[in-house]
Length: 252
Ligand code: PGA
Image (cartoon, rainbow, N blue to C red):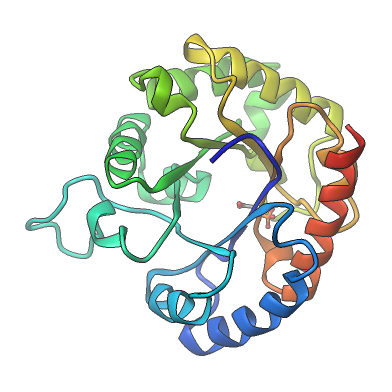
């Protein structure tokens, strides 16, 4: 990846192979006018990946997973390794706040997953972000810095340029209440300077990004695109969001 417009859909635990196929067909047509202007990926549940890779075989639209395990294989019931994903995906979300909060994913696990993905040449989309309490206590910069240092501090300079980071304030996810463009931009500047510098990494904003706020968010100099949950579940809304985000990016 290089720093440029990047929009990833995070379908979370929605869709199945049938609905994923319908989505892919509809979205491919909608995305035709701008598919060369941005890197776009659909991060889908594991069971949809094979269908998506068939449907999008001749498309520029990328495919992503939402999690992985770091060991290549072994007695890890229920897990899917980065190596198993290699043929199916271009990128993979790591450390989403839902996984951290509901499934006990730690910064140390994030660090291992990132290394495993990079070893398979899969682009990690690493999520960081503060809780509402941390935000209200003025601890946002401290929190995201700690997550970046612990999760990404081990990377080489070259690896730092091969990752995507999504700043997702937890209080903004699925609430309809996005961070302001200025505040998100400022926090992403903090993330960029953490862990010895992440100038080359692609930086996304996530948390209630919608067609209506994508342009203003993407106009900020530090915001290269978005990680989009709710608004990505409808192909028309996701396409509109990308068009508006690209307008913002062009204006910066
Ligand atoms: P949202 O989700 O767009 O629905 O807020 C974003 C995310 O969780 O990645």
